[in-house]
Amino acid sequence: MSIVLSTLKEADHENRVALSPAVVSRMVKDGYQVLVEKSSGEAAYFSDQAYTDAGAKVVDRNTAISDANVIAVIDRPDDATLAKLKSGQVLIGLLSSLIDPDKMEQLAKQKVTALSFELLPRTISRAQSMDVLSSQASVAGYKAALVAADDFTRYMPMMITAAGTAKPAKVLVLGTGVAGLQAIGTAKRLGAEVSGYDVRPASKGEVESLGAKFLTSSVSAAGAGGYARQLSAEEQQKQQEELAGFIKQNDIIITTAQVPGRKPPLLVPETSVKEASAGTIFVDLAASDLGGNVAGSKPSETITTDNGARIIGAQDMASQLPTASSEMYAKNVQTVIKSIVKDDALNIDTDDDVLSELVATHDGEIISDRLRKALNLPVKPKADESTDTKEDSSDDTKDQSDKKEGA
Image 1 (cartoon, rainbow, N blue to C red):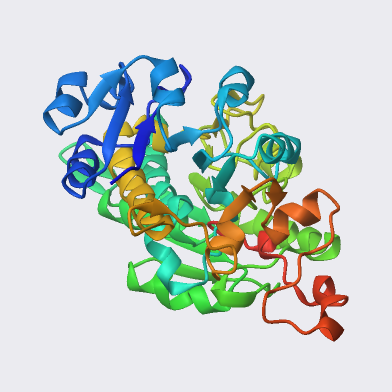
Image 2 (image 1 turned 180 degrees about the vertical axis):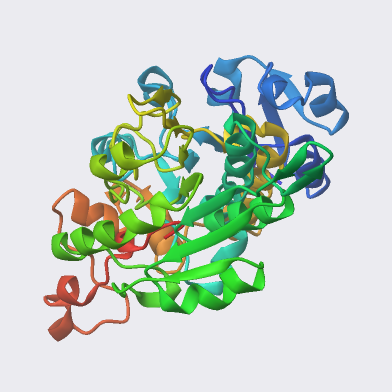
């Protein structure tokens, strides 16, 4: 096996690592050479010795970059690191390709093959084991409920004591995708009275199966593959109005609606925040530099409003459970690597239904249709399309970026 796999130490704010010792051990047994940058796993409680015991070689950063065929990361590396990548190398991670498409153009010029997990076509069944967004959302939803409970000033469950009875907390989860369902399940296990809201009527059964109440939306936004489509401005306004009444009735509101590469939808406008009772907790999993689901939320910050509500910008929930999230992320990476290595060599099949989207750049070209649209490039015709249909292919290609994680 001539494939050398490496992973790099992430930036200081990121506690996860792209390869766990358990996955390294399996990769080494399969014949891969694995390089791990020194101290990469410390924040996730994976020591350098654990990687050495798993069969990896612990090296400095330059060696991990220069000697690898495939480099696995969590977040896109800094510009200095990207500049060191060579033609023919493969970079796998959450590369923010739709947010900063110009970085992908630069990698294409360097003839680096970039696989960006945000581009994965998640409705294809065999892609589910590669789905980093879902594995990390599951961790984030679980942690969001715990963060809310920790910040809440009362009990989550009903408590009957000699001093009286405490009512259970009322929790409302907005968006019942992977993160939302995990938040609902965790809040229920903590004893709260839980409701779930979604614009997809089909999610009712999943919510009720967890023992929560499903709040029906008058706005139906069911999209392809069971995901929610992006709402129009009028639909968003109607959604906000109906949510205002639900929000007032709850003590904790967890919001989970995200659109990869786009500004998150505003579910809780400023008026709803101002009308919230003192002590109300908002946990915004969509908080980012692009905005959030809750007006006024800021990534990785907790804000107390004038009326005593608290808005937690829960951008990094998966990073706060680094051991579990790294283990799942590494398994996703392992699956992707197996899909691009054939007969002991890299084989990037850009006509494959999964790789044609997951691959952002290859052999000097922008591959993913979604990324090409973001860069205002014409959509590449599929291999099996006739000459007559090639000109119209861009009109028929569905934009999967409208699918919301958690909504």
